[in-house]
Image (tube, rainbow, N blue to C red; front, side, top):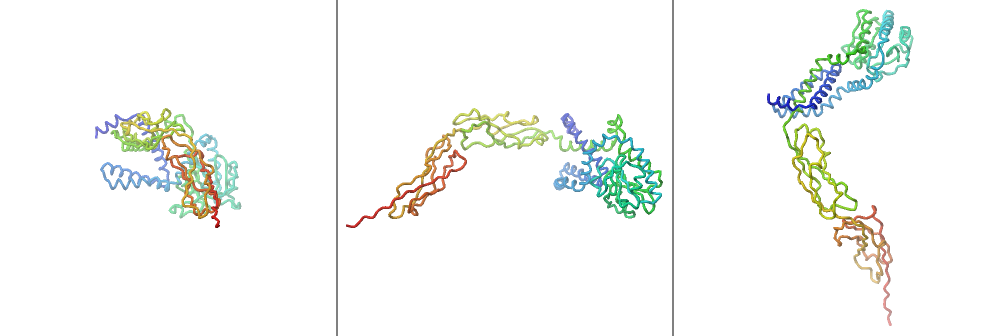
Length: 486
């Protein structure tokens, strides 16, 4: 065991350290994300399954390993289905987080807290129902239905007038962003947490529903009791006193939009220490399990041969080799980092001569990663016969069968045109350079006739034109006169 660990340490390169660091960073982000994912309890189960899989591999438990490999084959699909809302939420945040950070928000935090506290406390005393959403960093538009755009400056008078029972839109929610009321009369998604909302009203269910999906704070004023409740991070709670409202709003702004500090990098490195340690350990275990193997292995790959710079007036005669087997040597990790489909053997045909040519297949004809080496190439030489293509004219032979009816004499049979231009290799024998028509039955010919029979072209020939021309066969007849009696 110690020898194995020592061999692993000796073979670690700077690229391996970068690899482990990147994987650790991604695992760290996933761990932070799972802390607020609605189905984060699944993460523990996934970790347990992963540990069981590693143990099964270590102890050679064949059946368990095969079953778990099948599980991991559909693991990505399962994760996407279970966490689809959280994935969408995560990527939306990435898209807008950089833009939101550029805005100066600290100027209105204190003012917003004072205005909201004053207005909501007044509504509570008057027992007027209200639902106020204070936006955090997350996008809310996807979860909001209906609503009327306002974009008005936040003030106690405006906020209280919106929730006046005589206003048609008083039952909806108000969306506050920065120091503006962006929309009012909005409808929010209802929570399905019956244990929490079963004893509460619709406003509370809507507030909790949005708080489960975003980082916004939702403040609810009960119309029946005049109590104030806060919904945040998937939890709803009733405030014991009105003074707690200002403290909660102040904490919300500080947590969602912390002031920039000069030592932000140090704070990032110091925060979430447990998640960072777990991420580093998990990345190290993954690398040790899948990436540390240093034994040298050999693999054979069948590479197709391609011919470059062959002039258009030359052709390679059959049979010709179409592939070669190349043996590579290296560690398994190096084989996993390149695509064998990209490997090709290219032969330069610019200097070939007519007749037989011999090419030596060398290692420099194959581009491979520096971490792999070529051990053997089979065959190591390729013999090719190259012939020149020439343009010639081949006469069309009209093929017939049978004899014409009694009393009919064939005077002439001719094809128009009489010949066709073709391209043919100089190696093709003369007796194979033929173009004939399909057989014409002369028994049915009783008068001068023009036909367009199908042409049968020898496979060694290539027409000079892409389209097979139409050839007419003209048959001219004359009647044989009967002898007169004396």
